[in-house]
Amino acid sequence: MSIVIWLLTFVLVLLSVFLVLIVLAQKSKSDGGVGAALGGGMTEATFGAESGNVLATMTRNGAIAFFVLSFGLYLAHIAREKSARAESILPKIEVPATPAAAATPAAVSAPSAEPVPAASVSLPSASTPAAAQAPVEPAK
Image (tube, rainbow, N blue to C red; front, top):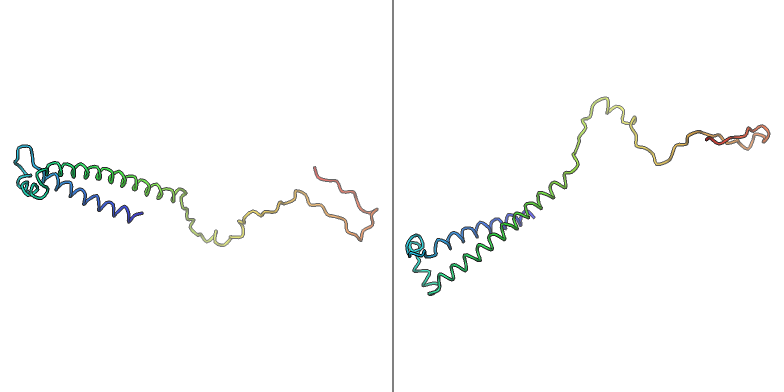
């Protein structure tokens, strides 16, 4: 996406230079000024007698393209900034390794998936007589 943004920025710069040159090439109402100095007569020879209409049409189309391209680049920069922020939503915390923390990694363990029983109940073995066995009451 970055290459497309740079390419469109380059086109925008070229379009800006084109617009400046087109506006300067137009004849002013008084037939003097920069338009005559830059070859106002030559534009009539190139585009014909209707050179004013051609240059005005090119200026209008160039200005429309300039504003559309500027707005598109604005939206592209916003999208690029938004995607850069989305990647860094959670802060990255690095904990420095201290000698005490490095020596006891087994002290902190992940919880196991198996539940731990609240009270241990021993079951009678088959070798003990049934009369000697005490009744086991369930824990409440």
